[in-house]
View (cartoon, rainbow, N blue to C red):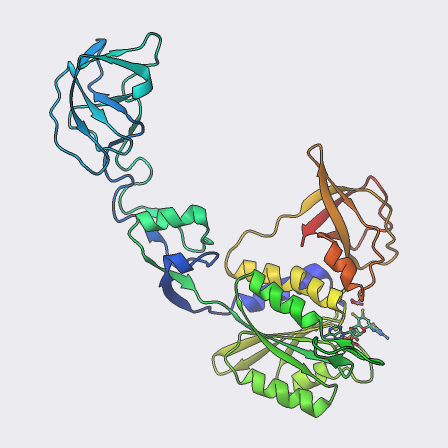
Length: 400
Ligand SMILES: Nc1nc2c(c(=O)[nH]1)N[C@H]1C(S)=C(S)[C@@H](COP(=O)(O)OP(=O)(O)OC[C@H]3O[C@@H](n4cnc5c(N)ncnc54)[C@H](O)[C@@H]3O)O[C@H]1N2
Ligand code: MOO
């Protein structure tokens, strides 16, 4: 059985061979999408010298009296020529007249009969309150580099480069399929030995959280032929990832691994030295130049979502050159049981107190306890070599 880091490396290697498409979309629709091009400044930013305040523009000198001559408001430039003893009223963003080099804010001056004087003790220096042409970015330089995730903070920079549309990477297409004789639709009440098909809701939403496309294929019974026919159809479709759940352990009806291989999927690994989520299967299906990555995840809702968070999510971030999810170092607030050499991802509650992160975990850590998972806000990462971590120990956590 391979360790977590080897498994993640294998997935990253395969995912890096995917070639996501590129599409041009409206900037207004591009929230959280990843830019597929460097956005270049087609003008200097700002495009002209302008005032940072509402004030009076003048040519700096040691004098303390100026005659007010004319006005320039933002968007209404007129070429007012001022001499050394003249100042022009200017509003924030107004283009600076030719020989002005300094702007004094309105609060710092007194005006009597058209004569402007500085109030006592105001700070007055050459160049004050001027925003120089190109001082944010010069013409033809990169304003926003490719692989940036578009957020409100990036949108203004892109817009200022004249881009109403941006090229972004197309969303990856995921199909999610559950398997199991025990499954019933969520809208039905479970009787006898049935359970609601809950895990695909978590996985579907995990895909959406990363802003990719998810297709819910529902569920099929543990019938080898039915599963095979369903998956055969899926492999012919235009998806990038297939995530199945259930049927990957060692039970009598755990057919998924065999079915994948009968359909031509190349197994990359099966089982990783982790808890929960150990039975994860990963394979690759190639057809001409099309490649589909296949994740056979365990049926337990906790195991499958943990698998998504610790394998699929970081691999996608890697593909799109996004920063790895930050691990938070926290002080463990209670003892935990860990007797084996697996890497554990324990559900916990992370909270900050006096600038220090703490984490508690009173949860049972059963892979079936999805309400516990819902109540948690982090996975406590307990590496292979750690045994029975104690209260006060420093641990790393992944926010979920
Ligand atoms: N003898 C062994 N038994 C098991 C092992 C093992 O190593 N030796 N591994 C255990 C581990 S760890 C896990 S995890 C599970 C994984 O089993 P499968 O992937 O084959 O999944 P199933 O058996 O089909 O289901 C497991 C569990 O999850 C429930 N389930 C299934 N699908 C859904 C769904 N869509 N939504 C909600 N819940 C679902 C299912 O009813 C089972 O309770 O195997 C252990 N066994
Ligand atoms: O991998 Mo399983 O998730 O421990 O129940």
